[in-house]
Image (tube, protein in one colour):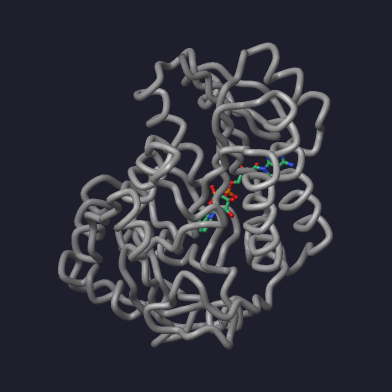
Length: 309
Ligand code: NAD
């Protein structure tokens, strides 16, 4: 029987992924953990307060709950990472090292750790960015993710730790708010549209980025983690694609349902980060190795979100 620990479980991704993992493995077999735990989250299933940098407590929780798999989602994201690079390095790198070391010591079955399209940089080919290409990230977050990918591959090759990863594009969901990334606008825009308010976009017109609906991201993550180990041939991190759009395109998609929706553009420091990232991603290896295929395009995502919020 699998016993799963989710670290950083109450963030944008973790909130939804934890619920899905509980459906798969049973509520009592998935332990949520984060720096702080709100009452509503604590009521959804077992949890532990945990700072991923606290190696001793991490080890105690793994022992106490007889954990067999860890999903390490604890991270400082791209935008916040630029204002707090030292903290980003510490959490993003030392947190991962703690989890990988524990996996090695305790012989855990599997580890999941997400990477990001932030591993790419301004000199990476922008359209249909290949799996293997020039990678010179210009953000602290991107540097962390690239180093993290290499670290995962090292622990797999050297110690046989079964660690798996995907490079998420910007994730768009409506159940939990985003945590300080460069693609957060694509979540806020739906709430403003629904409230009948004008949306002030922090990215400029024409800034195309790879994005993915949360439902696809979660399905893909679980699909990767449930695949037989021999199908997981890439042990850095898999390119994963959903859709690509610029701010005005998401605006137009919303206007098909809310015709009087209006947006204005006031690019800030996040514009430079966005411009250093790809427009679209070639995910042929995820498709070939473990049958990945996204289900949502932009209009399907817009319809689903506006129906639910
Ligand atoms: P988030 O910021 O919403 O959530 C991260 C969670 O980690 C938060 O709940 C936070 O409290 C927790 N955390 C921070 N420091 C911690 C620490 N020291 N110990 C324990 N927990 C800590 O981020 P998210 O969007 O849910 O991202 C989850 C993962 O997916 C991250 O690795 C992120 O880099 C990756 N990712 C996200 C996106 C996206 O668009 N959201 C895109 C690419 C990759």
